[in-house]
Length: 405
Image (tube, rainbow, N blue to C red; front, top):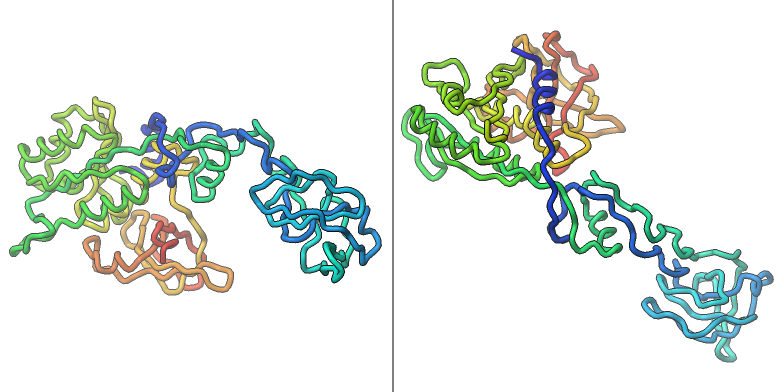
């Protein structure tokens, strides 16, 4: 049995980044850039007004109020066909280019129209460059504006559009096959008989894979027979990553590892000092794909996903950071850990008065999906600790759920 840290290190060592592909900009959100992106234009491409007001020559308004002749109007999207001379101004809109001769903009609130005709009084003096974004002040043509490895957010999409990147090179999203195993499982549409439960693991893992940016495929339920498992695993090994839940413990019907051996998988570990989630198989197929055999208990399976599978997927997709965010939080009530393993307890974490707070949830075991669904994080109790006390500062792993609550 290896530690959680060792399991994560081995899993990441065995993970390789996927190749890149070119996709439309509109489909790129949530992906990772596989290329450096340079600007094809100066930004802004001209001296640009940052205010509605009047384009002026700063030397003309050293003494105020200054009476200037208004010689034109410049809306955004047009380029002026005139220049400013001494004691002249032009009405200008936010984002519009300054006319030649102008070197500043005074906001409209600090001006007053002249009663006698086409003129304006500038009520306060301004220095050259006031309320103006100089040409190329944001970036110059040819400058790298987004390096490879950048996570594509809505803001990044806007920048990509600004530099003309309608097609974007990104690292591929992993295809992930999901197989649930066990005679006790029935489909979500079925009414369970005595001794049966609905297959929830497939739906939880499908959502987690999708949330992590992968492309999930449900492979159904395999019964606890070698024939059924062989068929399901054979299909699962076609994917970049194959997740199988159940059948990896020590029971008489835990046959998944036996069938893995029939496919000549290279197994790297099969037990982790982790609660929940002790029986976990990590392997590689001769076909090249990674395989993770997860526990059948629902909370165990979804917890192992967050601790091991999500980092593996993130490395595949080119992310620079693999794990969920870890924070220090103040514990609100006592917590006991008698497992002798590193404990990942479902918890609720929130931010209050400039610090994180965490409350572990009372769980009835690794099958308690009702309690788990109320959580947004894990309280991590080291294996050498048996008790944690209220007000103690503890390590918490924030799941993506934390940011959506």
